[in-house]
Length: 424
Ligand SMILES: NC(=O)c1ccc[n+]([C@@H]2O[C@H](COP(=O)([O-])OP(=O)(O)OC[C@H]3O[C@@H](n4cnc5c(N)ncnc54)[C@H](OP(=O)(O)O)[C@@H]3O)[C@@H](O)[C@H]2O)c1
Image (cartoon, rainbow, N blue to C red; front, side):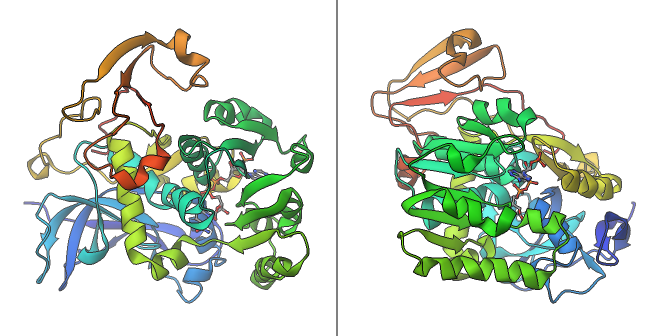
């Protein structure tokens, strides 16, 4: 019987992607209160470029060598003492910040979220950082209201796409800055595109935006702040422009600190920096609740995050280069080698279209051409199913009443799409 290996992506030095190496590490053992998972998927995030370049506040104290990997979807293969609620084979997810680009890793059982059966592991992994950030920005930090006008900077990126999809479900009027070649994507996701290389977003809405989410931070967020309406809110979440310009950490920290000084300026505009890690530290249950809510939407096919490519360990360094070069339209997801046949859990059946149990639901097959205009062309298959229920909508068993404001009241658009089995 071959011995199980634990390949990991180790950062051997801060700097360029050449510091990323595939190495064999010892197989970890689940300690008290922990589970060990076989990693099914770990998505690559722009934030990991910051970690690699030693520009990420949460990992400033870490020194190489350490294992990269911000998030994980895995299948439990070992249970430590004192863990009661989980079984071998259960699928769970966590945001680990580091350590998940591996074949195996351990997780604190009390912190993981459950991943519903049947969802694609790579798609589920894309939700952990980017979509939870987007959800919390809209519903926890900005507390958006239906009809508000929201501008998303970097709308074609991972967080940007999630903001548009979730913002549309929340009934917002959306604009998104992106390079011109991504205009169709931004429009398809329900927003008005603004070409950041040609147009001035501060002139698009003379009255100003209610909320602006800015992960780019050009000009130290000044223009985003200027584009707010009186009483509007700027949520800064990142500083990729400063990273590209190779600014020092101190200069970046000063830009963020200045956001809080702007609060005293006249005009009633507000500005803050949102961090998913800070919010998780303050409200640990929110993170799990919000992620499980998103998994519920994924299981119900109400959202469909884009996976640009599923990659192997050998491709991670190149993937970091691609992340830095930009212009991706979906996420790169590390999917470690498929398990040996004898270790595999039987594949789950793909769930059928969701409906309210016990409620009469009309299912209509409609041609994509008829609905392209109404759904902004977001259908990707020639035939789709429209479900109408007189009692409103419930998108699946794990969707709780709390997220009703997120969902369209009368209709659910349920898409049939082929699920890739590669990361299952
Ligand atoms: N605070 C938090 O908790 C938190 C959580 C997650 C992410 N973040 C941060 O949020 C930011 C976005 O993350 P992500 O994962 O979505 O990154 P991403 O997938 O790389 O997306 C960034 C997007 O910004 C676009 N962009 C670059 N320059 C721009 C400009 N001047 N104007 C408008 N768009 C521009 C890029 O488009 P092109 O390259 O195609 O031009 C890309 O589509 C990053 O700074 C990340 O570190 C923060």
